[in-house]
Every structure is written in structure tokens, then in C-alpha cells.
Amino acid sequence: MKQISLSKITKKGKALYLAYDQGLEHGPSEDFNDKNVSPLYILDIAKKGKYNGLIFQKGIAEKYNKEIRKSKVPLIIKLNGKTSLYKGEPYSPRLCTANEAIKLGASAVGYTIYIGSRFEGKMFKEFEEVEKEAHKKNIPVVAWIYPRGKNIKNPNSGEMMAYAARTGLELGADIVKMKSSGKTSDLRWAVKSAGKTRIVISGGEKKSEKAFLSEVRNSMKSGVAGFAVGRNVWQAKNPLEITKKIQSIVFGN
Ligand code: FBP
Image (cartoon, rainbow, N blue to C red; front, side, top):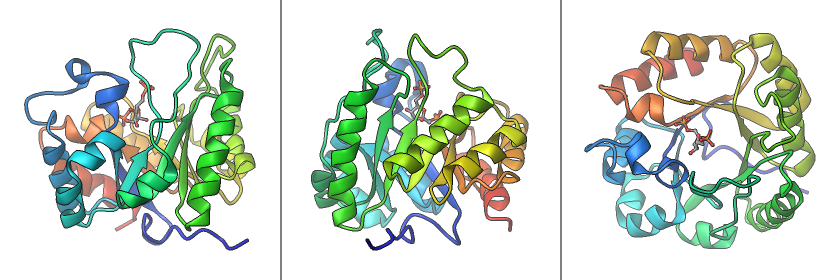
């Protein structure tokens, strides 16, 4: 089997992605303001900031397809999702197939798996279908792997981080997007556990610029490929300014 190329969504093995699936995951009232509620505002940041990928759900990818294609920003379509109104054991159903995403111009596809959930097996099965379809067309698969559910006591422990990373390798993900405890030693073990699968870290809730950049700096020391950031960029007063600062750490300029 041929190795899947990550060249469209990485630069020298490193990556910075702009995540914008929070409209579904958290709802507009929780995360958005008058500006960043518009997908075009986000697309402009991704284009001017030269992001290695912009993460949209299928609906936005369809409705703004002309503008996305014109921007030439690599599109990563998130294939599953859920709202925050759903309170049961976590399950994120697939809403779009890999083939549909590829037709919409996706350079990569993403899928969330909540390991530890009662529905883990269902998500593994859907992920396997996604992976088969995407890899057939040489499209990389990014697995959001979040330990969650009533059996998971400490989702951000070093042990859980390594388990999330390793699950990505075992399932055939090209990149795992995961949360971090912020401890470089925990991340180093997660990177080792992931083997040839690359890791990008989720940005998380908005923090001060100083705190966020220090998190990026510490994480990059562990060998992760980069970050997939949403709120810490598009909730910032000047998203392009913080983008440049993150990039200079991630790409080491
Ligand atoms: P942020 O950088 O805004 O945290 O985005 C990363 C992300 O993984 C999004 O892709 C997703 O919508 C969100 O976090 C999910 O967060 P949670 O499930 O913790 O509410």
C-alpha cells in the first residue's frame, strides 16, 4: 500500500490549521460575535494567514464552495459532528461521506472519535469506512480523538493522551488531532506512541495571547506536527497578528 501524501496540508512536515466547526459543536451564542459568525471572515483569515488547512463542516463547504475554491486554501471537511445540546454518552454521527467531501474539493477529511464512550465501536466502524474511501483517493484522514464518556475520569492525563495518539496509529489515521495537558513530557510520550501518525494539538478555549503562545512553544518541543486552532485565533482582536506569531513558533522562522 502506497503511503498517503500529506504534502497538500503540511509544510516541511509541520502544520497550522484553522478550525471552524464550533458553530455546530458549541452553537453560535457560545463562541461567535458579529464578525466571526460569518464563514467569509474565517476564510479571509485562512487565506491571508496562509493556513495549511481550513476545517469546515459539509454545509459551509457546500454553501461557500465558490469562495473556498477561489481562495485556494486547502479544505479539510469534518465528516461528523454533534451539538452541545446532546447530553448522553458521546457519539458523533457521520454527516458526510469521504467521497462527497472530495467532490466538494477537500484536501483532507476529519472525523471525531470519543474513545471510552459506549458508542466507541460505532465510531470506529464509521471511521474505518471513511479511511477506506479517503485513502483509496490518496486523501489524508485527520482523526479528532478525544477520550470522553462516563468511564473517563481524567481525559487530559498523560495516559489518556498517549492512548488517544496510539488509537490513531492503530486505526490508520494520518494525523491525530487531540487535546493536551500542556506538559511536554506527556506530549513526548504521546508522539512516540503515535509512531508514524502525526499529531496536531487542539487550541481550546480562548486564553491570553501570552499563555497560548507559551503552550504552543512548549508543545512544539515534544515533536508534534503543529496545531489546529479555532477560538484562540478568530476570537482574537487581530487574528492575523497572532497567526504570524504561532507560525513563527510552529515553523521555526
Ligand atoms: P478550538 O481551537 O476552538 O478549541 O477548536 C478545536 C476543536 O477540536 C474544534 O474542532 C471543535 O469544534 C472543538 O474543539 C470541540 O471542543 P469540545 O468538544 O471540547 O467542546
